[in-house]
Amino acid sequence: MIFYTRRAVKDILENRFLNVVTIITIALSVLIVSAFGLFFLNAQDMFDAWKKGVRIMVYLAPDTSEAQRLDTRYRLQTIAGIQSVRFISKEDALDLMKARMQRQTSLLDNLRENPLPDAFEVTLVTESNSPEKIEFLAQRIEGLPSVSEVEYGQQWIDRFANFFNLFKLVGYGMGAMFFMATVFISANTIRLVLYSRREEIHIMRLVGATDNFIRFPFYLEGLIQGLSGGLIGLGMLFSAFSAIGSQFEQTLSAEMVAIRFFSMGTCAAILGAGMLTGLLGCFFSLKQFVKE
Image 1 (cartoon, rainbow, N blue to C red):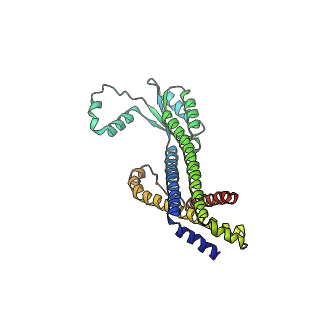
Image 2: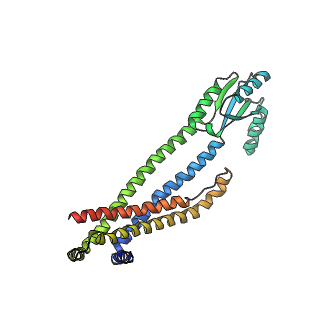
Image 3: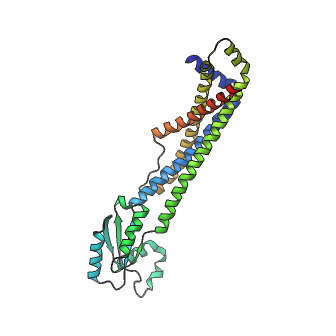
């Protein structure tokens, strides 16, 4: 094993330029695909955190009586999937609007009457926070007596869900594309090394060297390329994450969301994928070389 490792390292040092190009290619592929995955990971965390705080606003008709309001509250509390119901009077809603507008409160001072309706703020259980279940609950609530309108950001939810689905497809496509491109470049690098050592390999065969004895150093070379590229790519991604991530922490802390890097298991899987690209590149180049 030590002999094979020395042989592989010697080949890498003797063909520095080709191997550096391959390692850089693997590193850039790992960086781009992993950055895409890291963004998706944190965006998914944000979406999950947002879903935990989903609210449905149920606006009552202007002529709703006290008895009708109590009846609507009772009906809301009996619907499966609803965690809590909070009544917000139109006076409280107006005060809240004034507090949020602050500098523009003068626009509300000349109102002759409160234009806002009474409303219920409905909190959902975690299991009912999918877009489909939210829409189903909203439709049920709209059918209740004294309910004039239901608001829950349907368009935003649909767009975000569609964006995530598209994001996944693009991510898978990019990952496959970079994987194939990196395997191709790694294979060409090993092939060039093989051609430069064609006479040496021919002599080794003449003196009785087996195919495994000849191939194994090249497999190690591919693994070293993949591991080196993976480490460099992850290192670059972590450096960028450390530099940029701190700028978002203060903003996201208000939403109770903490951005995070990949777990150790995921990092190991990324390094394994990098090593696999180098190994596959070596495999295909050796297979082609043997045919020739």
